[in-house]
Picture 1 (cartoon, rainbow, N blue to C red):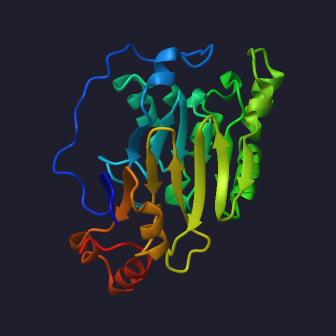
Picture 2: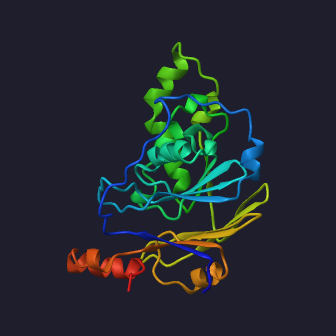
Length: 270
């Protein structure tokens, strides 16, 4: 399997030191957008890792999430806890306007485990009244139920804001749009094609990986998976492969039952 770029999401052992950086802006900026700029249209397709974590809370890692930025639009693949805060940071650190939460257009879920979905409500309802377009969410069976129940869960907030004196510019944006997917092309838009294909993730089914074909590069995002011939086939020759891997050292810290579970569900480092 030949790939030009290879990125591993290391699942068990945190980095030796917490990264430090300065975000060069004042805090709490409300952003509006008149459209995609010429600069954004001409920027090569980018891949931004927003989170590489696990269900275990980690001060150095957000939950799993990968952003692909293409011609001024951001497409998120999984949306683990903390990933939207990292999207805000990346928006300013790397000058990517489409990573501002109300400008993110679409989310693609690989599977319905909570560590891959916990920030979905954060994205959908962060300043929903200023979101110019309804958030689109693609994923396996169950994503429609989840999206519908999010609106029910946020009912008190919605009733207060809609019935109060607060200006609500986009009332319909409180409703995300869910699409349950199967293998095949799930979105084609402005020279971008996103294709889902099944991968083995233990007893969890369906579980999907995604192949993104842009005008200038191809990207495969594995999601959680054990070794997969289909994944190898789909990733052959791509420019970037973002693949999960579980640390052998971290695995040994688990109970025998969890070691068995992870070995059947994830790709081992060795």
